[in-house]
Length: 358
Image (tube, helix red, strand yellow):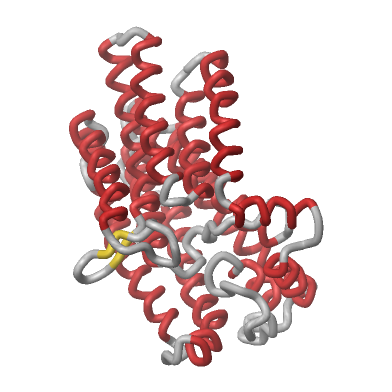
């Protein structure tokens, strides 16, 4: 029998804690940059982050109580993904931002469609696998349809260009395919076919080749500065607000490399506590998947939790020089309205799955 419906307090508390911590760290890391580089008030990026968190909290609560049977229905889920595809194409009708087509400029604000895809692709795949199982669709037919959905989304994000987000979508999709019971042979074959696509994507962009060359050679400048920041932090850190690397040594200190500033100011202890909080979000997401009330809800929760886990791992690994540099934000912590908002929508859906679980 279904248990009494209630919010997963651990998941909710961890999400809000990480988001609040992000506002504080963005305030610390971005103040000199806002003042000296952008000629804005020191609190500019912190205020933007706070606004994103407030809007994200509202969106999270809405996602936590939307009827899941309706949301995971095939028509709604595929319509959401279709709208994401339209947004991913619409960016090419606008002027590029920093040489890329990642931002959709709307009258009041801008948003990254690739961040939306992190929610809508797992939703669509979860719905498709569940409806195909119910309709007893032949496995070969279902596999072609679902791989087509993934390939379309992957390529639309890849040509923005945004290889990091594209690979993140593949990780979530792979988790859903495995949990849905797809046999290993087609998955391995698909993976083998993807390798030359990814290699071609790297080869076509000189900056990607440079990043790989730097990773296997001399440490890239920004990663070197990140390691200095983390090394300066030691065990307990230099103290809140006392980072030196944010003073124009470390690029993007409030965004892709905010973990380095956490390490410098709060040390090993603070960085570990932050990762523990993000770990609670991921673990509770997988717990929700394990207790989900339906196949679609389980696959959705697993896909979203995988996205959060892999994104966190990639961001921290880059800061520690364990992977080549790639611009992926630290979930709920890095500055960036789109990613914060959509991550909180994702955690809202995880809360919803957990609430409806058995």
